[in-house]
Image (cartoon, rainbow, N blue to C red; front, side, top):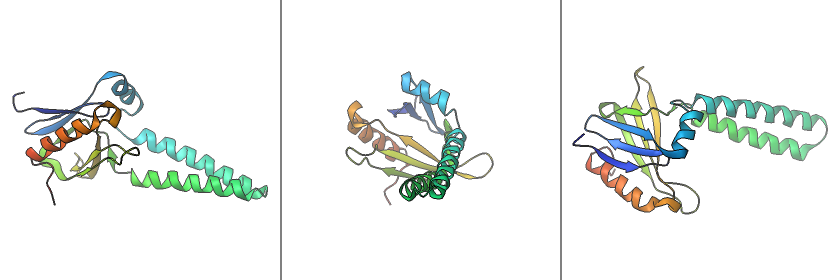
Amino acid sequence: MENEKIFRTKTGYCHVLPDKIVLTRNGVIGGISKVVAGNTVLRFVILYGLVALWLLYSAVENFLNDQRFFSLIWLLLATFLIQGIFKSWNNSAAPIIERHSIRHAAFHPARKGLTRAYFEIHFEDQNGKIKKRLIMLPGSLSGGEIETQKAVEIMMSEKILTID
């Protein structure tokens, strides 16, 4: 793999090849994410949906028992989860993204102490649907700033990420 460029991600490594992007999972965190998520986000969507249904049931039950405060709290939490389900409906956990199928790529920098930096890759899957793949970069406690700079340089040099 002579033209391969590699950078670390949250759960492993991202290999940028001339024809595709390959995401590998290494170490303890990668092993856990492989077991929990696999290559799909469907498990998380189902889990969020079940928790949201339970919260809605609790909200109605509390409302009927004249506990308006808890009813409102459960309703707000259920709304938050349902919004998350709709937001991640077209997400993908695909480990391989063909470069010719990439439609758009964006970089989102970390918000210090709040979020990690990540790439958002929009690509067309085998069924012709546009999917979104998030490539999470390492956090600030594990050399995230240096890896983020390296990752951005690789993505720009490969013309996957462009400055709009």
